[in-house]
Image (cartoon, rainbow, N blue to C red; front, side, top):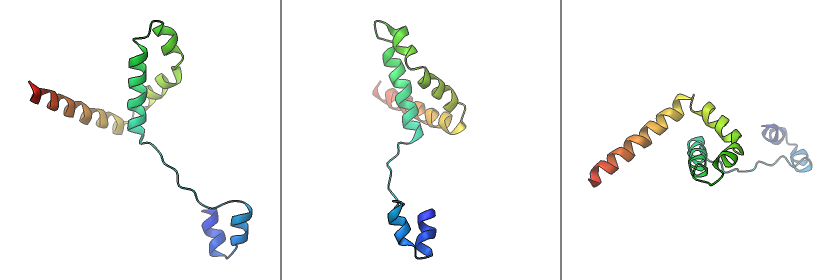
Length: 92
């Protein structure tokens, strides 16, 4: 926003001086981040010292509990679950 304003008032010199050129960032959808956290914890549950392994991911546990309070994430997992159930019932 600052760069847009400076460009609008023809102060491109300040954009260059303070390196305010916009950058593109790639981000991962929060649903996929949540999925990764859940899968990682499930995998750690099979480790020999699973209590220590899972304890080292306490932040992931906190994130999962917070994210699952959001209806959008619950809807996402409901859809995924329905798709998995539907695809496995076809194989029988």
